[in-house]
Length: 362
Image (cartoon, rainbow, N blue to C red):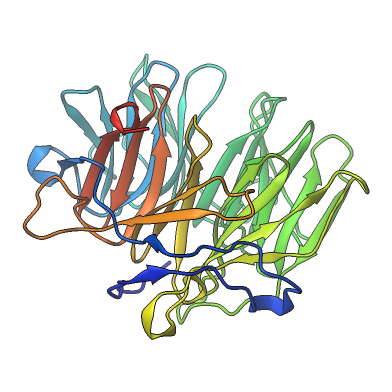
């Protein structure tokens, strides 16, 4: 899963819509300041104890500890100290260093998905159990793991380079989904309403019922990046689905309450000078703050969208300023995460960034 280098993005923002045969603009943004620096960041790098500066995943556990997955190791942050986990250090080592996904089960064990398999960390006993792909059909479908999610019934859903896998923890049995559309790369899995979950596949997004096995594939005709990446992340926002893509920015699958179904995909577009638009950049991650703002990690900085369902939507980008050490450390923002205290954490190509959203002006 390679990443592209960011470009410099400057100017005034106007939201337009022409992508994917959209019939009308989803968002219109007129005469607003596109680049703004009213956020103060605290930066953390390998000099502060991180195992690597290239951050790929962030998760806060039920104890309040922050777990950070990097390209060269995992770490736990207690607010003062980083405790690192690496592959191969001892018999309780994690299975791989490049960590794409982190989650927690009902027993408060930490699960990580890496490019070399799955690891379960029992933080109480300090033991690690590793799982890898085997010829056995009851094993992982592939060692490259991009997404992990526990459903309401305690099953672990695993998105891999070779499709979807489900782990029954009580029986320690993996179930592979070998039929289309589940047998393609799955890069993200999230909760939906009730017993439903969302997942990305190579041809679109799937809404799947974990109890009945009923599903619906919403096909999206998008171009991949030169490295083959189509979809990075998702967020369900008031029943609508927001999708972060590799070549077409942010897409929206709107829910129609009158028909109790989903309408066609609409693009969320931003255009600045030189005809550069949001559709031309990668959006890596999405999260939502308590006040309803949508935060995006992109290859051109950190973006905030206010009132995304309003007729006129304001949007701001936060970028690195070389002479301002309180700006974000790097413009390639791979992951965004808001913890229980409304602190925003941004994982970039050059370290971890922290900003307390409670301190922002109203």
